[in-house]
Amino acid sequence: MKVKTILVSQPEPKVENSPYFELQNKHKVKVDFRPFIHVEGVSAKDVRAQKIDLNNFNAIILTSKNSVDHFFRVAEEMRYKVPEDLRYFCQSEAVAFYLQKYVVYRKRKIYVGQKDFVDMSTLFKKYKDEKFLLPSSDQLNADIPQTLNNLKIDWTPGTFYKTVMSDLSDLKDVYYDVLAFFSPTGIKSLFKNFPDFEQNNTRIAVFGSTTQKEALEHGLRVDILAPTPETPSMTMALEKYVSEANKGK
Image (cartoon, rainbow, N blue to C red; front, side, top):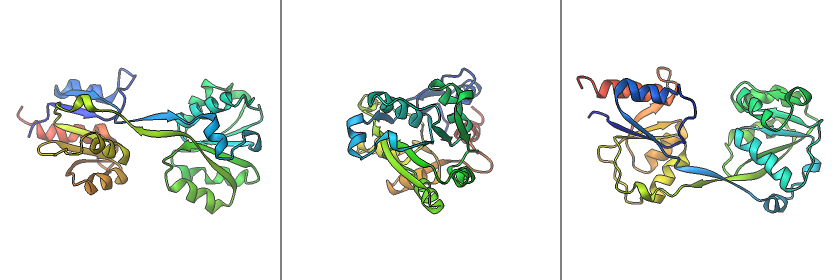
């Protein structure tokens, strides 16, 4: 069956040259964006209830832009003056670059991983005597505590923000040929909003094995999977599928 409409369960890209827009223009398909989940900050009071005192740490582990935003938000709510000698361990260059929103980059101690969390292990070993704080969401990837515990460093997790399912009730009578998901929570949000959802001819695209597992556990048929060696991104997987489905259009 041909593909005419795609719903991507993420915010619309802010860059004009997004591969999604290229996909839309090349194949004349309609691509809409709607976050199925969103992030809500945890109050400074609730962070304190986790027995977290920011003064007790001299190193911060930042795994995402959200962790950067909410660390500095909580610091401001707590009236904590972020010291200039605080060490920042950023999972990727993108996170480190985003940190410039809050600090003067060249004047700070910033250490950058390659991409995956485990890649930061050598950095943590080098500074194993520091006291690390990990500001994160309430849904922490299992490999993060496992990596930190294996290194036997002094670290404390803190829930600074939560992943919340969005209200999608306005989509009740809207049909899309393809729904694209990027996390297990996105799948859960679909069924929380529409408990009686039936897939029928809707194609389901998933990114990552955990998202695929969640989809299968909900009885969904996964038609499009990324990343694969051939299609390492969601847009590439969608492009390949749409190209084949719309042949002779």
